[in-house]
Length: 182
Length: 182
Image 1 (cartoon, rainbow over the protein chains, first blue to last red):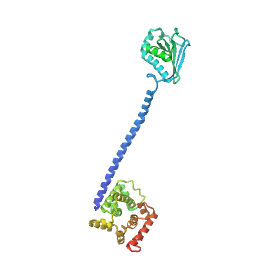
Image 2 (image 1 turned 135 degrees about the vertical axis):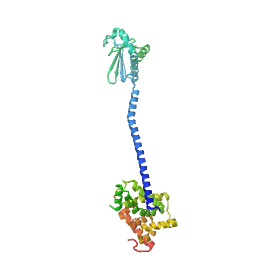
Image 3 (image 1 turned 180 degrees about the vertical axis):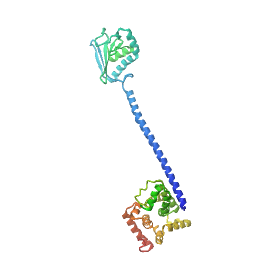
Image 4 (image 1 turned 120 degrees about the vertical axis):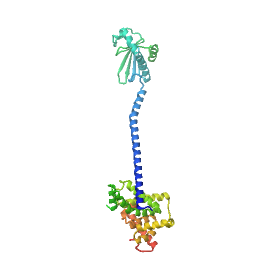
């Protein structure tokens, strides 16, 4: 059996070991908690951003517009033709077609508009001089806002700004096909 | 507040010499008590060192609601039982001790049990069932109150009373003496 001094030394040696082990445990737990907190904060900030980005990507919308169109009306000036499209796929197709033409031809259209007489005169609701193959295309978005274009042959004119865009043969053909224009 | 608790309070306040008093006051008694479960003096000493190391390391665990002696005996009992379960020891005292260990036990015995009567009874007590043995030890050898003994053993006062009654009857039969333990 140990002497008093031996016992005392051993007691304090073991108590120091216990204190040291407890200190290490506390540090480990603190590190785990910090890591957990960091991961939680990171997830909470990052995941909503990812979700909103995904939602934006999944929106049935044109590449340039953040607005979502819900209907497209196509009518002839002389009243001989009228059609309204509500089907989401058809609306999207038409909207994309028109906006593709607008975006692709924006610079070209503005320079061409400067050479023609149309740039000085903002068109209004009155009929253009040539009624043949003239249509009014109205796109309505989910907020109820409307964008109106005049289709005159190969020319597409934005009513609000008077900008003119030239459609390609393929675009005309596609437009006539989708809208079932005569 | 008892002397042990006062010394521990001084130790918590920074007086390391106060812990010396606690070791001198309780260490041998603790070994003797642990030996009731473990039947190995060296293991009992080792467990007692662990108990005191625990007391020195975990300074906020003892809440001063019981005497320090009671607290130490509660810790000791828990560790002794855990050790005995792990080792699954059930040796009779007379089968275990070598000559050297026998002399060590006898010197510890006389150190702790300074009373002739207690020395006489001690050998018989070891043959009692565990609960009775521990109850006799705590009440008659360690001079704990019934409440303190109940706290150490995890029983109520009534159960301690019953254990003591049965233990005394058994000891009377074993030793053939009346009024052995008052």
